[in-house]
Amino acid sequence: MGRSLSADRLTRIGWNPHMLRRRMETSLPNGVCIRPSFRIRALMVALLVGTGWPARANDSAAELSIGGLQFVRTNEVAMESENLSIGLDRISVRYQFANVTAKPVTLTVAFPLPDIDLSEAENIALPSNDPINFVDFETRVDGSPAPLTVDQRAMVGNRDVSALLRELKLPLLPIGGREIRVSDLPAATRTRLVDDGLMMPAGMSDNGRQQYAPGWVIKTSAVRQQVFPPMRTVTVEHQYRPSVGSSPDTILRPSLRRSSALGQQVARYRKEYCVQDTFLAELDKRAGSNQTNSANLQERRISYVLKTGANWAGPIRSFKLTIDPGGNDRLVSFCPGRLKASSASGNTLEYTANDFKPDADLKILVIGTF
Picture 1 (cartoon, rainbow, N blue to C red):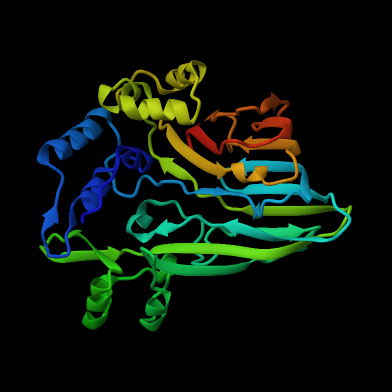
Picture 2 (cartoon, rainbow, N blue to C red):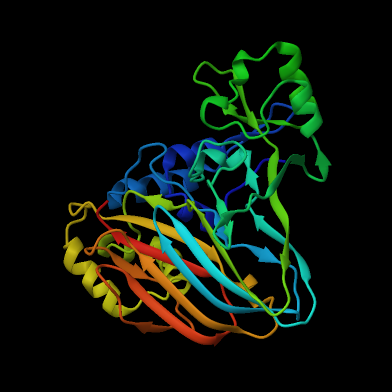
């Protein structure tokens, strides 16, 4: 059946009317088109125009939730320290592990890249055009490069369609210069892709022709084996480019925040990012009372999977988080949980904790001019 968008998804991709139409006007395989009711679509467009929210295509992008290295759960290796630095252009992590046993311990190390649903890929912020390592990740162990073996598969439901795509000489992850132009494919190839469920109806063109978009999901995993010598500390460093969600305005700006139609989404923002009244007061000073976004404020959003740091023999003995918003005029909000603010240098924010056991992931909101 046709694909639908939740209110949560609409907000995360920026409530773009062009994208609303493209995603909501999805056709059934038999040619019957499912469209949102006129009343719903009119409400969306009127709200966007009335609040001054930009109505241009591809202005907004949703972030992918990525984290650090993951290891199998063990009581034989302890994490002595974790130094996590999050910026808009780079995430880096420095771990120190200690084997607490008298024998070598070998663990599987994984860097899980998030699944990419190609039916929504145009709205996702991909940091790199590399179709395999699309976040440009690098790993070092005790200062030496430690590459991970990457496995990538294309899935439709539980069916692996990687071999079929390779047979048809089509890329598994069609980004950058590898994008698939469906209209340029041979008719037999296009028909086979549609019949096998790899191409999904994506609305009608201006001249009334059926359009299609890739409908498979990319699953990427990067793994290696790491040996921890007995009674010795091993330093693992890891960095990559984050997937940063962006919007050309912010739903927390006064004229948008006070709209009853956006009340549920504003409440979600306040909960997910622990937005305080002091944060909103400072935002209001910068935004002013204009209906339009005359201060040119924008949003950036980063999601970081932190809970996997709880897989060790005991808690993380020393944890440090540094957030660099990239400018001292930018506002930052997130839920620190048990982390306590410490001294910061320049425009960075620093938080620390001892005997830290992560019980929640990080969602960081940055508002300012970019």
